Image (tube, rainbow, N blue to C red):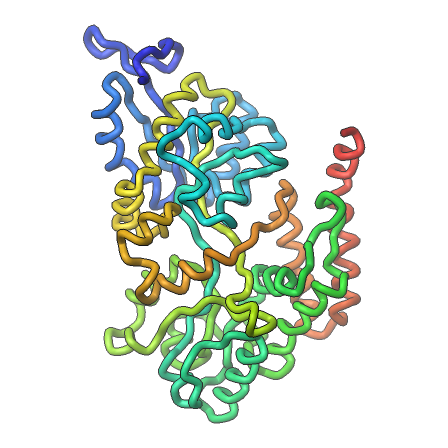
Length: 414
């Protein structure tokens, strides 16, 4: 299927045979782990060599922008799904709809709908989910047992009441740890209340709207009732704080499955568990969380787009996805792999499976990271009482509207 390729610049000679080099950039631990899958792909595709470049996550974004400016992007790349809008605006990514339509391996039916949608921008698909993540509740089951709470909270009122009982009876210093340097919790609380976060084709902020303010009020109550620590220095080490009853609940992602298993004592391993996020109303449980993870994208500048798609299909095979999970602990994007690995029915991954069926993407604008950092800044003003929630969010909206000024200008030209 592949050898009819036109051999162009990224080819090399090996004896009498010409080798096609397919450049693939991957980040962090995934960049190391994916190398072991190269041999299998190359065996199926003689004459093709996948050149994996592993880039630290901390340098990845700058490296990609530099490569874009220098016209030296790779053929294919791993991309965090919140970065996809930025590279779509740069017109750097190849739309993949036609490839999916003609594929026997990849179909939207095999993926979590909320995750799949993070790759779709204005009706076009630009990435295929490689691995997924979202946020769930990590909690101390043994401490909840002590206050007679036999199951994790299903509503935010449950969460508040559990926190009050834990603190009142001295089972933990705080009920929950909500780091002030993270913006995620107020965002999904706002979404659970119906906030669209950004309005009018994502060109204006709506943080001061009634829906977002209702979510922010819930968030702030944990701090104002003394159920969550305000000072970051009170929890220097999350795992130590979780172990020593500084707090009993923490909202985090799948990377902490391995960390909790590794860092907590063996005798504590049955004392903690995970659960989907609480909802505003019990009938809506589980509540919305955010859709995260990494996708595989093909750059428009690639001269080997068909090969790049074949590499995506190879990495998307359920058995390859299962093996990748075994090597990295990254949650597989293919639902079939969850079934074959029995991840959907056992702790602590079952909570993620259920949560992934109830996730929503953040606004798909290139400015999102900048907006999220602004929100984080204003959260401190609210928690420490410098401004009321409404005052702070009105000021945030002013900042956000300035950030989105260029977007409004671009939209006005459509």
